[in-house]
Amino acid sequence: MLGQHPYSQVGGGNPVENLRKGNFPYGKGGARPGEVEAVPPGPWFIIWSHLSFKVKNLFIRTLKEGVRDPSSRASIAEWRDVLQQYYFAIQRGHMTSEIRPTERKPSRDCEDRIA
Image 1 (cartoon, rainbow, N blue to C red):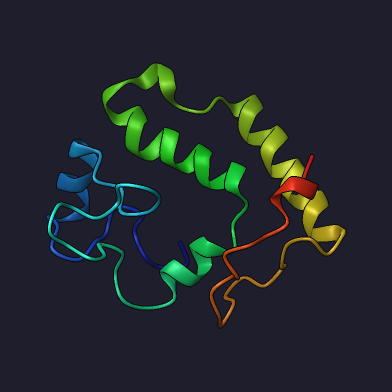
Image 2 (cartoon, rainbow, N blue to C red):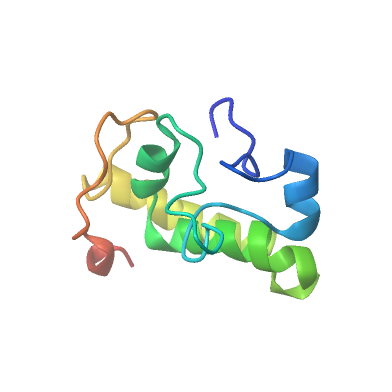
């Protein structure tokens, strides 16, 4: 996450406590009840917004759901396949290759074009 621990969040414990509890602030249900946003201030949400749905899903499965249920973590083969699809989407111009995009990705993206 370019210098930010994936379990860092606004109003949460330290990253180790958050890891143990599966408090990964990105994706659906990332914010705790009563909080608008748990993602730390800075470019982190913008970076997250530019990942493909499939990449985001693997992060959520591995870093959120996988804490309590290790069998739900993405396998190496799944990571390879999804990252390869993501790479090809970048090569085709469907996704950005920017490491630190400056603006949030529009909510309507090209996921349906990514095999």
